[in-house]
Each structure stands twice: as structure tokens, then as C-alpha cells.
Image 1 (cartoon, one colour):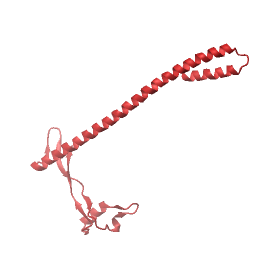
Image 2 (cartoon, helix red, strand yellow):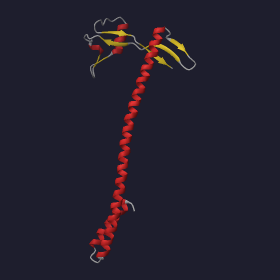
Image 3 (tube, helix red, strand yellow):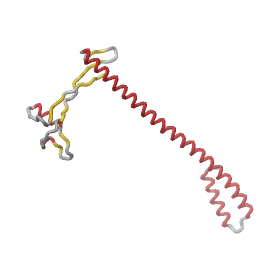
Length: 161
């Protein structure tokens, strides 16, 4: 019998108790049977709840273990890429192909490095005081002097395709 059915049986028992013509022994027998079934159901529910709690805790621990493992793998990837990039710079072999991959050191898009001076108003984005670095690159390349405010810096990184 399901917990839902047992609840219905309890409702029926209460209705029996309200009936003055109902045999008191029938009420006592029904009550004893239902209490045993409800207690057994409750025990079974508690076992399942306990098992699910243990499963949930085990899954949480596994999530944390996998997160730590993923971070370690990501760190290894970055370290290996940096080692490969350093080797390529050291040997001067900055572009080559193998049977599987092409390797090359390419220039990254130019970026603005702020030097600490006062940034002219036209480079500030009104919604939130944010520097319009793209416009600064355009203006510096066009000859605008932003000495002491910002300069263009060209970086490089490894690409594996």
C-alpha cells in the first residue's frame, strides 16, 4: 500500500470513529493495522531518504574532486603551452607543421596599457567610467600623442590548430 493510500485509510478510520454505530473492536483492529503499516512505510521512507542523502554527499564530493582534477589539467595545459612557446622563441623556430598540427607564434591584437596619467574625456564611456581602448589605439596610430597616459603594446602567444 502506498503512503497516499495509507493516508486515505486514515481518513476512512476517522470517519468510522465519528459513526456512533461502528463496532469499537473494528476501529481498534483497523487502527492497529494502519499504525503498523504507516510505521513500516515511514521506516522505508527514512531508509530511502538516508540513502539519497548519502548519494548526494558522495556526488558533491565527486564534483569537488572532479573540479580539482580539471583545474590541475588546465594548469598542466597552460604550463605545457608556455614551455612549447619558450622553446620556439629560444630556437627561433616560430612557425612549422607536423603531420597533425601547425604551430606558429602570432601577434595578438594590439592592446592599450594605461600608464597612469589623466585619460582624456572622449575615451571615457559615459555609462560607466570605462576607457575606450579601441579608440585610443586608432588615435595613437593616427598620430595623437598620449604620452604618459597610454601606449600601444603588441604581445604574442602560441596558436595550435
